[in-house]
Length: 189
Image 1 (cartoon, rainbow, N blue to C red):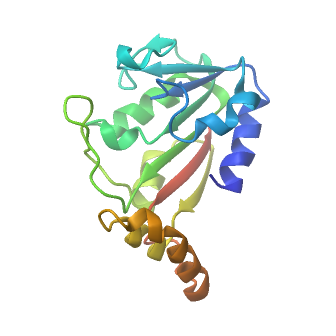
Image 2: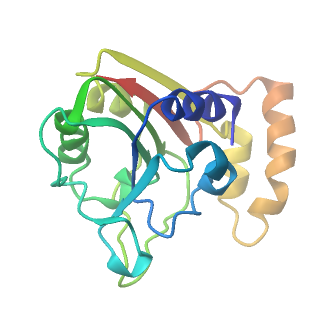
Image 3: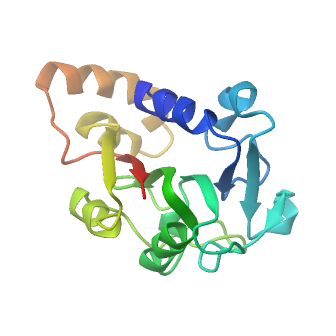
């Protein structure tokens, strides 16, 4: 994870309740390292009851009243829904004014559907992120995996082993933030 994620998790943890959308099993998507700080505050929501979430629900129709939720975590979910705009509208609808959300969306990553579990529909550019989250009063983004690291991760079987070399190349060549693996996003309603 990054300093950006660490900082935003601390901001969310200052509240009382955080709904982790797509957070079934509870320890995936990098959340295990935050178990202590999120203890007693994090509630998982997933459409798949086999993941044993606290709430079985769909991001496309969140089971919450308007303006009722304090915070959301939504890591690596929007690429798996067939209408990410509707999903973001649901997050916005159910967040209370001043409510916060931390998300991750991919850009340059491999196809990763799981047969019979979920599909893989979308990748998100910086422009797509700005469009999807434009209604929020605050939008902060951080590139995740810059050019060389992102491209090396696309290599079958050896990509993960080469990711550290990619990070070094990204620093040496100052690869910028347009061709990246994805974006960490923090929004406030």
